[in-house]
Image (cartoon, rainbow, N blue to C red; front, side):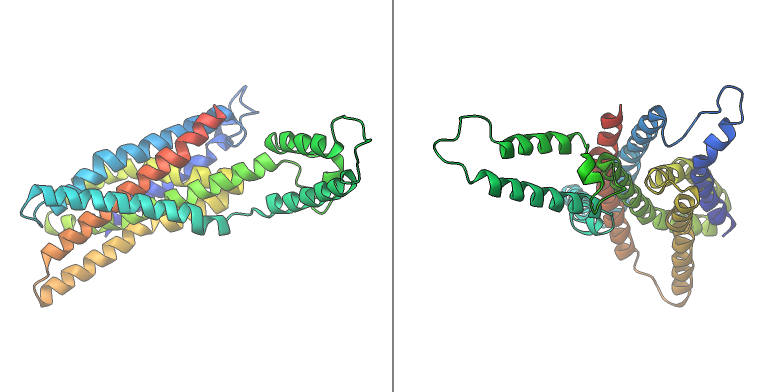
Length: 315
C-alpha cells in the first residue's frame, strides 16, 4: 500500500509542474514568463506529451499486452490477432468519444450563436438582392461580397463591430474558444487513457510487492519516474483549457492520482479471493491483455490526432 500511494504521489507531483511559472517569475529577468501564453512552452508541452503517450503505447503497453496474451492462446498468430483487435478497439473507442461524447462537454455555444446570427444577416441581404432584374448593372452583388467577406472573417476568427454588439457580445475571439475546447478535449482524453492503464499498474504493483518486496520496489521505481511525466501530461492541457491551476490539478489528482490506489484495492480483493478459492489466471491474463492493448490504441489516437497537430499548429 505504501509503494502504491507514493507512486500516485509522483503523478500528483508531476501535475504540480503547472505551478512552475510562479517560481520562474521570481527569477531576475523572468517576470513576464507565462505558462499559458508562451507559445514555446505550449509547443514543447504538446509535442513532449504526444511523444510520451506514443512511446508508452507502442514501447510499453503493447509489449506488456502481448506478454499477457501469449500464455492464453496456443498459437502466436492468434495472440497477435487479438492484440491488434484490442488496439484497434481502443482507437475506435477514442474516435467515438472524440466525435460523439466530448462535443457535448465542450462549450461550443459561442460558435453556434455566431453562426445563427450570420445566417440571419445573410438571409436578410439575400432577400434584398433578389429584387434585381435584367436592367441591374452587371456588378458584384452585395450578398456575394458579404458572403465572401464573412467566410474570410470566420476563417480568420474576426468579427465585425455589429456582431460584437449582438447577442454574442463578449466573445471576440472564436479561435481562442476553439483552442480551449481542443485543450479540454485533449486533457480529458489523456486523463481517461492514463487512468485506464494506471489502475492495472496499481494492481500489478500491489501484487508484485505482496509476492516479493524487492520486485515490488523495482516496479515502483519504474512507475514513479513514468508517473511524473504523465501527471504533467494530464494537467497541462487542462490548465490551458480552464486557465485555472486548482481545477487542472484537481482533475489530475482525481483521474491520475487515485486510479492506482483503485487498482491496488482490486489487487487486495484478488488476494482475498485467492485465499478462499482458486482464481482463474487465464481469464485474468486475457483481461489484462485486452485492457492494455485497447489503452495503447486509445493513447496512440490522442498522440497522433490530438496532441501532435496542436503542437504543429502553434509552432
